Length: 120
Length: 109
Image (cartoon, rainbow over all chains, first blue to last red; front, side, top):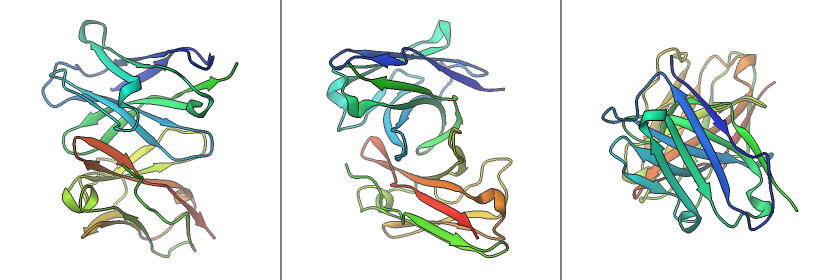
């Protein structure tokens, strides 16, 4: 059974760096074809894809946020970490991590999400 | 990289069929057979309903089907049920990244 869970601060100040951790079970991020992505959703708004890391450590980022994002994995701990620099109130959102299957943006298992508020 | 365009809302009566469109460009929807659809109920995480244009994950009802023509992908829900009332998002691969749609609220009348 695949599960994922996001963890990190619920409140960050403007200009600070956000660090979120996705801890998963039921699969290995060293298995060929596997990926873990991050998606966010501002309150009442649409989903926005942020980043993806593959089993072979290939990394992809949203072009509009690429300069602010870093995604890494720790296969031994079954964790994926996303950092986002220079946080702004518009970054207030629920942040999800999700397991990706082969092909396109096929996120078949999602975490429960964590709400991050950016405010001074 | 702009969000894919979806109608803000679609409604139908129980038992009817509805179709949600997802319009992109030749750089995303039209360029790859990599379109997915998600269902999201309020306060819940999204659920994958269709992947790679027209494939259903195990456990998803066959009332849900996907297709694509040119730069527009579509999700059809047949035999509409009260439980189908939710937000729906499309997503596409595009030049080494992904993009989501603007979202569609489905209302069962």
